Image 1: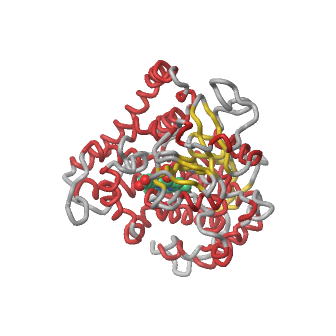
Image 2 (image 1 turned 60 degrees about the vertical axis):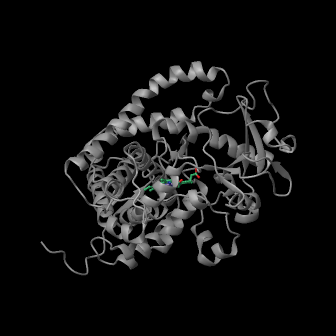
Image 3 (image 1 turned 120 degrees about the vertical axis):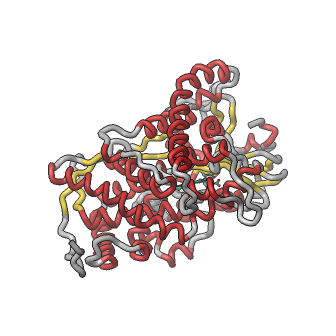
Length: 476
Ligand code: MNH
């Protein structure tokens, strides 16, 4: 960003060793930009700047400033950095659309019907069915005494869930020993978008061209999967409107009927297949990590599941919403490792952030969510401690607004929030009720970054638990 956009930028601290041309790159690891930035926030404070290959980025993790940045009259989401590079594959889909692009609001209004409470109630049986594919696969592992690959299997589960509920499509993930090629291509595309070497001025074009050639294949594969998903549906002459694809193909903007065009529908399908599973998979994996490491939390969560679900073979929609403690454990995992770790806010007009930092129209800052979530004024002296009771209703009410932001902010906040929370709480409930989790490898948390955060190499062994007897014997 041009320094003139932040007239007072010289007053914002930056890492001590700054290299001419390249910037603040000493001692940092190119594959872990978020964890590097978290470390810098600890050293430099909750407002700091990094200069990465000539590009200045202002990071904000101060709760007061984050609350200001949430003011929609002064600030707006800006598509820059990795999200901008994702436009190569997701174009004007909801996540990568510019805030002033007409297709953002059109897409948002057409797809909103896919995220109402009624829609979640409709998706619930499918979510249960996908979770049962997971437990069928984990039952076999448990019987054989084999470890399960937690992040790998959470990715299979969440991909099948969004594919089935949103698009009526089956990736066959649980029938495969390797991830579906869609996942491999998606991870390559995300890693590519995160690659900071693409920020080097001048090198940009030459280097980007060489790299782009490599990723073009992956982007092409993603698009071909999407075209197949749409082709299946249209070939069936299906007029339904009860999932995301049906809404996009067979409905328009409420009131005017304005339709999404074919290119935008393709972008939305890629967007939802990726955004709809990658972050939820990470959230489930981190939650299982903390549960496995905190037997007292796990015992409380499981007791709640047994009480609320009783002998029901599968839970109803409401029985998932009633798992308040499981939900608090999930929130606490998302506090420590918000799996979409940042969002960017730009000034709508010249302004002064926090009465201290002048910003010209268009100047932007990146909210570093994991650092915000560790602010000691808000979270107390031991922010690293895993404690679901931080999310007791009275403690949530006692905290200022905008201190817990795993789903972003404002109009451009996550449209899939309720979807993700329902799916994750349901799955955690089913797993806690069914298995004892064994941390057989004494796992040490390693967080891998591919725009999203994910625990790496996390395996568990399982034993089947005696589930409370059904209140009503299931028929057959
Ligand atoms: Mn989701 C936007 C986090 C699950 C679809 N999501 C965002 C943003 C965050 C986020 C943060 C805002 C990014 C920004 O301001 O640039 N999302 C999450 C997390 C989970 C998650 C932590 C799971 C946990 N997201 C989901 C699911 C879906 C989804 C599930 C779809 C079914 N998210 C989106 C879309 C957007 C988004 C689409 C873009 C919304 C918009 O800009 O209109």
